[in-house]
Length: 257
Image (cartoon, rainbow, N blue to C red; front, side):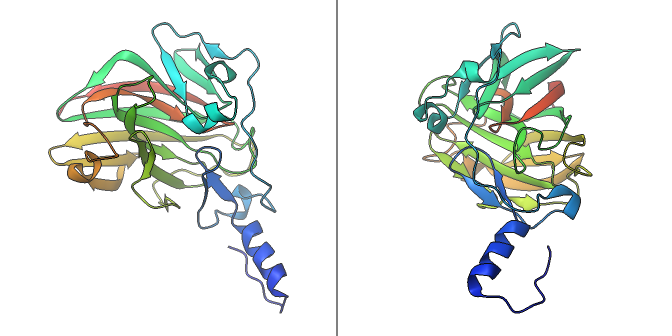
């Protein structure tokens, strides 16, 4: 984070602090702040929160897959067809639009398991003015309804990650700001590619998120399967992307211990 060495009015100091630490957002109206990434990864100043756009030629063209945008996106007039899911060389190619979860109803997991996939952002922050996350969700129940619940672990291209869910209201497992972790790969600059492998595992009474084969967060199942959170860690698994983000997902698989 840059430092202010000269004496400045309070208003100038506040502006400088915000400019050096742009918000990281999962969906409109939920701006989060992380410790500043290297200068190559941060804009010179934080722009106002951008609204979700509509993707040209949007919709889902991958057989068997469906999706649902966030409730707050729908309240702003967004629809599922304003985001796009296509197949691209064997990978799932997502472009948003509104923040969205995508899944194939036949993709379910129960008991102890690990769901993993590799996420490649081809051009970091190409569609937004600050880092937006993407990752895996598990424990999907009542998916596609207004009461759907799921837990997700998502990475940002600035070296941070978040663990959150819906039950159906949003809840956070690693704080409002998420966390920076050395295991999370960072883009070298805006417009450059960045790739992260993400895995979410259920093991006994624990749920873990691993990024690039390093466990970055461990949570008690009893803290997740609770009122206002998950109905169960058993259920549908899939992928989730924040608004105005593009990425390719490969190798989405579930394995048993």
